Length: 364
Ligand SMILES: Cc1ncc(C[n+]2csc(CCOP(=O)(O)OP(=O)(O)O)c2C)c(N)n1
Image 1 (cartoon, helix red, strand yellow):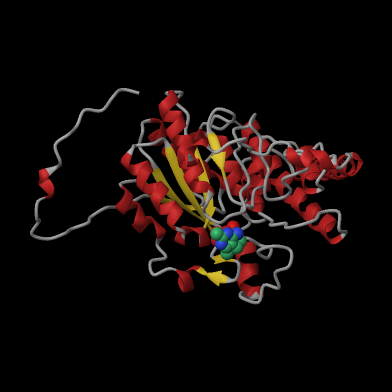
Image 2: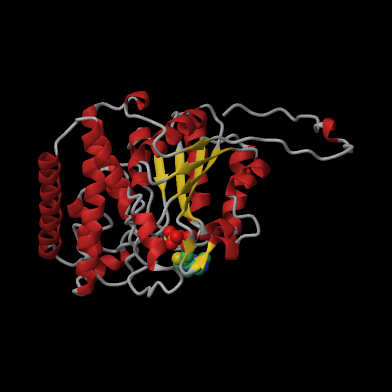
C-alpha cells in the first residue's frame, strides 16, 4: 500500500455555532424489484428458489435429528431468514468475496454452495463435515466458498470480518467482506470499534444486522435506547439502508448496490428486517412472543413470496415446483444417510487444527 503523508488536522471542525446532522438513507421494500432489473435470469431465480427450499428442508430435518439425539450441543435454526443468505449469495462473487456470520450459520453455508452432505455431517460431528466434525452447528467453514464461519461469541466475529475487508484492500484484489450478526449483538462494543475502523480506513466492508426482533427472549425495544440501527451509521461515516428481509429480491438489490459501493472503498451498514420462526435454539420455550405474532410473520414467508412470483411470471408450474420440493427433501434425506455413515474423528485429531506456539516471544 502507498505510504500516507502526514496531513494537517481538519480545522473546519473549529468550534461550530450549532451541530446539525441531516442525512437520508434509502430503504429496500418488498415487492419493489423484479428479477430482470436485478440482472437475474429465470434460471437464476429458479436456483434461488431451490436453494431457499434446501435451507428450509435441511433445517427441518436437522431439528428432527436433534430430537433423535443424532446432533449434540447447540442447534440454532435460520428458518424464516433464508432470503438474506440467498439474496447475498446472488449479489457477490462467491469464493472471491468474504462472508462471516454468527452461530445461525447453516443458511449462509448452503446459500454459498456448501453441500447438504458436508453440512449435515458437521452437525453429526463426523469426519466428512465441513470442519471435520470438530466445529458442529455453530462452526461451519468453507475456504472454497469464502465462508469464514460460523462463530459462537456474540459480536466477536465482526472485527474479524472487518479485518478480512482490510485484507482485501491491502491485497488490492477487489474483494469485499460481509459480516452478518444479530440485533442483540449490535450492543457489543467490538462491533462499534470495527465499524469505526471500516469508516476510518474506507474498507470494502458491509456490516449487516439481521434484525429478527429478538436476542434470545429480549425484544430490541427493551435492549436499545435507539432501536433504529441505521442512525448509528452516521457516527462511523458509513452508507446505510433498511431492507425488507422477507423478500429475496429486495435483499439482492440492496446487496448489489452496497457491494458496488464497497468495491469503491465505501463501507456500508445494512439493517435487514427479518423474523426467525423457531425459538432461539432447540431449548427455547418462546414465552416472549404470541402465536398471533408468529403467524403474522409467517404469512410474509420469503419462500412462498418467491413461489408466487415464479407462478405469476409463468417461469414454472405448480407440479414442477412440487417436484423440486421432493427432490430437495430427498437430497436432505441422503445427507442424513451420508452423515450417519461417516465416522467420528479420531480422538487424537483433537490436537490438530489448533493454533499453537512453542514459545511466546511477545511476552519476553
Ligand atoms: C459474548 C456473549 N454473550 C452472551 C452469549 C450468549 N448468547 C448466545 S446467543 C445470544 C443472543 C444473541 O442474539 P442476536 O444477536 O439477536 O442473534 P439471533 O439469535 O437473533 O440470530 C446470547 C446472549 C454469547 N454467546 N456471547
